[in-house]
Length: 466
Image (cartoon, rainbow, N blue to C red; front, side, top):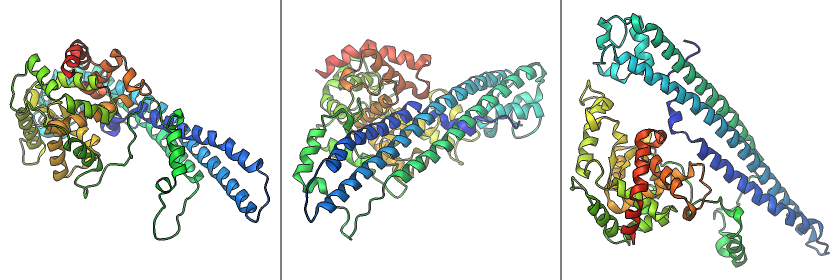
């Protein structure tokens, strides 16, 4: 067992995106290249300017400081870019091992299932590896498994092989990620140490030089045409902040969306509509096209991509009130006082799943994804924050903005993140739609079918937007 790990040790890898880490590395490289471009003019200004004055020594000293500043910044960003690039490669390797482990684990679960069904909640929530460990020991926390009264010798060899294969791959994944992360963090700390420390003296805070000096504003306007001022394919630039804590009720992202939707026309909803026809979908998109356009522009994604996903989701498999019932059932199953011994993922039919996987709103978005887009930590949502996220997802206008932002996040994790939104091909939009539906499992059959339907219906969605 020493050479094995369990899925719980590395399950976080499902949410990790090597492409997004590489995108951040590219952002650091962009900043390095921008600084390197500045270094040569700074050197010329220092070495080729000859003049005599009482203040000339100050001028020379300031230019030397500026060159040192640029050089140190470039070195720091270069080191950070290299660290993230190496981590992205290692993360891809770790996810590959994790995927291999998951396949063996699923095969093990199917094999165990031939011997019985988990009855107790503890048994239901146990990983297949731990289920088999308990079964072959004939004692432990899975006494609610019917197979404990059956002979498992006929599956023992195959189950042991699958168990060890899954555990070995999970161990490889854990080792690859941990070692790479440790190296990356150390390199990032070194990169940070290379950055000069800026200290603004006085109690008035930092001066707003950009607002105060017209020449700086003019230079900034001219620089916007330089490709090094932003990564290609990115949407509108916004301040990046980490997830808000439990003491913050309304996140900056949610506040921004609320300000955007305040001036937009009222949006149609499908909360009480149980069966939405294609004609009703077209009418919904046509009625809400102003909102969809604004949401797409806000996120920096093509409006037909957002409209095409809306076509697939509006009405969906169930109306909004049914989503509320599903969410309530899952919350009850998760609660200590809930539907025990039934675990949430073992609830019947569409009720099965975790509460944060429940989708809400006309353009169905899982609560977990909505929380991430809105700047909350989905693992540590307070009840009030959770209520605000649900409310935002169920509001048709805010829902469209969250969906657009989520599509932008998905695009940033693809191999074509640097393709401008107006140049995305139909195949690339199809992949984004499949990722929207399938998440980490977008390449499986269900999500691929969603992508095919997206393409089939895209023309009608475009027509409804006209």
